[in-house]
Image (cartoon, rainbow, N blue to C red):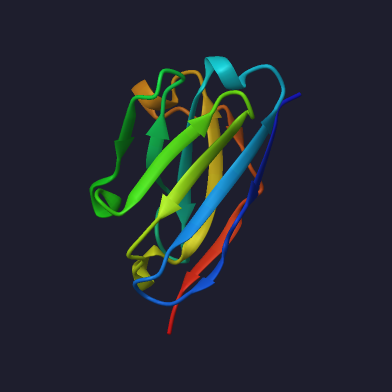
Length: 120
């Protein structure tokens, strides 16, 4: 059974930084693309960053240049470094895994979510 456990959320002021981490259990990590999606009240859920098992990445336009996704295959962990945070980045952030996550945005597994709040 695959489990994704996020950590690192919290409250930060505009312009600040946070790093999210997602530890994956199960035997799919090395095969899967990993990503982060987010959802805030009244908005559609969006996939903000994805990384393949080989390290290729892509981002939604609103976070390009501010967010960086990375993975440590030895630790079965994926990270999301978030810099220059804005109030509109406030959301629950979910770790995702999927064999077709990079190519099709298809999520096979979800984490429980971690709250990120950007406010002064």
